[in-house]
Length: 69
Image (cartoon, rainbow, N blue to C red; front, side):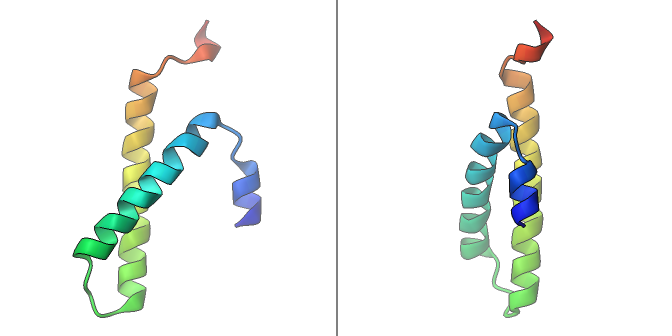
């Protein structure tokens, strides 16, 4: 986990991941009641991944890319 976090250098990642984490945590807390810690954790991680991908794609479309100039 430390190596993964250390390898994240893109500012966009540091801005989008906390948002997707909190949103996935709220969704998991409100809707996932599988009566199994493993299933709920897996569903939370999948939700976090999907929300992160969606936020990343939207941010890529909306925010200007400074490297293109």
